[in-house]
Length: 259
Image (cartoon, rainbow, N blue to C red; front, side, top):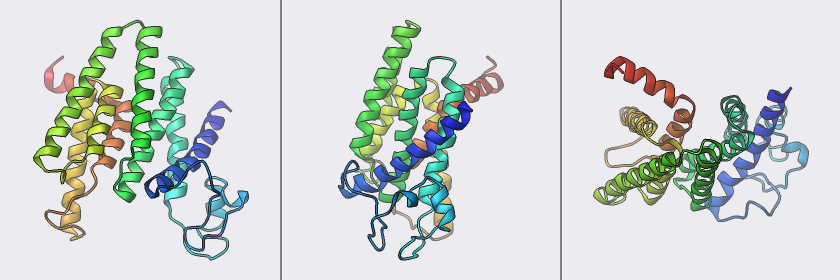
């Protein structure tokens, strides 16, 4: 029962994440204003906004103008539900407050993933709260629960080092390869993951980014010199590393380092 409730909470939060994804880049308030159809601008009723279910019942179309709706909405809702359930299973053994903190962190990363993919923006309205939440979680987890302040220092150092690396790339590429949003997101990654998991996340980010860029070039969807947003690769790699980073590092160190 608790797993079902966590999943339902996740898809409900996912519905709100869709609001953040679409409204913040357009400079609209995500706290005021009713949801409406992007095509006919008709205000949507509550029964048009039931997470996942409304999309299925309406067959992916607006009730009023019958235009096809983006699959972004049910996919983000479903992804949030799955991520919440995974976070609950993963962190509930530590503390429920830690679980809640990771709900916020993972939600923010999911918003940044979709926002940069769709609009090419890593909004400060999401990145800065992520930094604050990450710091609070670090202090609570490693000062209050485990009293390991050295971990906090290591995470902060990792964050500074990672963001400095991305800042260097941004300067070298003159903002074409990396932007200011990537630099700030890299800082968040360092705080959340620390060493050595940050290495895993960065490796996955650059590898997946290179593969996708190559595929787009082969398919002639992009041409040389044209950039693709890197934020989605950073955000997704961070989410995966939160859950699987320790296992990946253990496998790597045993297989290649002989530890």
